[in-house]
Length: 251
Ligand code: SF4
Picture (cartoon, rainbow, N blue to C red):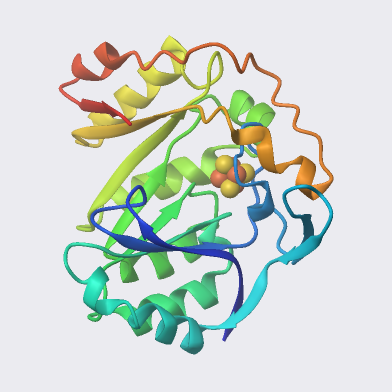
């Protein structure tokens, strides 16, 4: 079983607990206007200009699951002390067979996390996610129309999968990117706080907009056109969460 990976980052400390290796799988059905990993959107390998623009490299290498797992296990002595492996992207659940095989092979050997925006068919989510040890679930926009306008996708599958996740006895962490004037509004963060409260979720991580997000687009021959005021400071509105007894951590 093979899959397409566009980056493997070792010694990561932001993609779950401890020291981790993060594997970035290529391909995502969403088109978030603030995406800071545009090379994760296309499912196919693509040319990327290197810094300076003089040379090109190919982003997206095909890996056999067995070979990737062997590579990851080489760092077991480092990763097995509270860390592990995180599958990110793109949307890692968009290569479900490959991800599933990697998770099954790593089970019991290394702690695994899957970072997902949840926009995948229910049957994919329900089959793959139980094999992870931790899920990092992004909740972006609660209003279906705004979700469509800013991410290119309706949020119904996301909310369905989030609901399914909360019914499992599987550890998960909710994360929301704080995009000024888009996701950081009182309406949106208030709705997320209400949703978490209804599902008995006690914490959320809020990730302020990455002002370097546009940096990679030119190297892919694309124009970054976020459509919001990038210079504005996002408002985490943590009081909206504490009103529900939810701890909001701004990263
Ligand atoms: S879900 Fe993540 S990878 Fe996909 S477009 Fe949005 S920010 Fe980019």
